[in-house]
Length: 312
Ligand SMILES: [Zn+2]
Image (cartoon, rainbow, N blue to C red; front, side, top):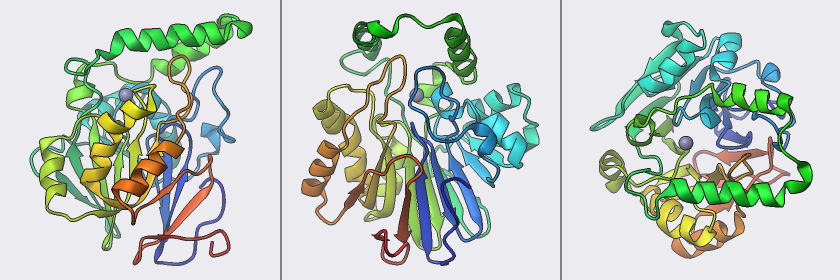
């Protein structure tokens, strides 16, 4: 575990943001990892730990297998014995890295989704969508190139990557899949059920899928959600077109953003305050939390209330 002791209370779940869309979820004796991208390459803000220090995990859930979500999954699963759970494309990525196939679970999440029972908790895997390269307006790739160029200009003082930095970048970014199907097929919406407590994890804020519409349509809200908050450099568009439609569908009592921090060489930090303000209008009863890396967000599960520092 990272960032502190487990909470001994059986009715408390603790979420820790570990940069990008990585989270650690702990409750009781359980330690789950959501995404696994800790050695993030050159010129990244340090996380405060290295993949070597991640020594406990029962399962590693992969929202989608782009390198910035899965690069360290095979390594961490190899050391901890965790199973890597995600789309079959995600399973193939870690198998290619040398993880035995029996330590993976590949699921497509189609129709009513896949429900996996882990004893003290269950996970429903639903098919979701990434920002779609084909149908997205404006087309993301040319605009990502513009972002990349803007960043190069603003970081001119740092000069180009050194050969060592370039090699580091190449090795990290090779540990993922750039298969086009990742966008349309291998991006998942994961719903964790701990007793009656429901936590949704969606690490890329693409369009709502039919599977999500059906599952959440009649649910009347969930307790907590972690939702992707990147892709549009303009916060207004990110909110209106990407993150808020998902938040409105999930209707969580506690909301955490994901993926909103700097990601060399493209994405720049997005401020989470506009998300908090928008959510306060959309869902006045919802608490939007923006923790720093490793900071515990402890939630009392029966009431979905975020515990204060004194209560932790
Ligand atoms: Zn991605």
